[in-house]
Length: 307
Image (cartoon, rainbow, N blue to C red; front, side, top):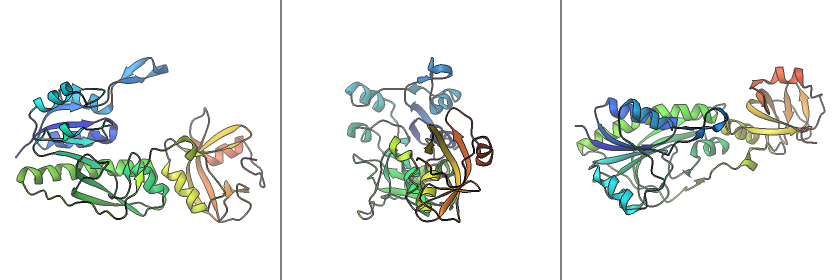
């Protein structure tokens, strides 16, 4: 049985879910996404979101309201007569009248093992915290922040060197498959929702710029988790002699020394252990291997980063 759906999403993460929903024969009557934003060369042109572009390829009507709080916007949403709405990284708050205007509810694809990491940056926060696994979950939305009951979930192992970009791409595909399975169950009337636990609630706040500076006075494992949790963007960085260097990839390494000391072989000491730089990106330059960077910008053994 196919459903009549509204899809709400913005970034590339949401595109596979939209594509899979259409491929399974569901009728997507409208797509809501963020309005085109300045971008392109020198930011002189308006660039449509990845979901916007995908919707146009499928000839689906696209709406880009700045808010859904007005009576007019809510009436327009309800006027599509959808059975349900699918929300994947949309970026706008859905008011209660919108949540209640579709009979089968608004289903959100969320990238964490709820109730852990509710909020804006669950992928990055899970890795930065050193979590060994996470999940993608289909949740029925309610007024609270990611507090709704869970209809379906798929666990995902976080490898010891997996970065946020890799986890994002894995979740993107697993999540698309999970959502179409959830919709199939919803259409049959067999999708059961279980309330979230009230224990273990954590919040995944938006990543702030000051969190991207590497603090080598932390243990090597914490530094490693910070680097991979922020890779490839916005990227963890250190500064030396006025140069900002993003660290895109690193591994744990042997070695001891004062925190921030260059140990040789692309290694930098932390308060416990060391990391070995694998890939870096100096400000204004393309990404390169740490070995190539070191040859062009020697940091002698014993140099203190940030001193």
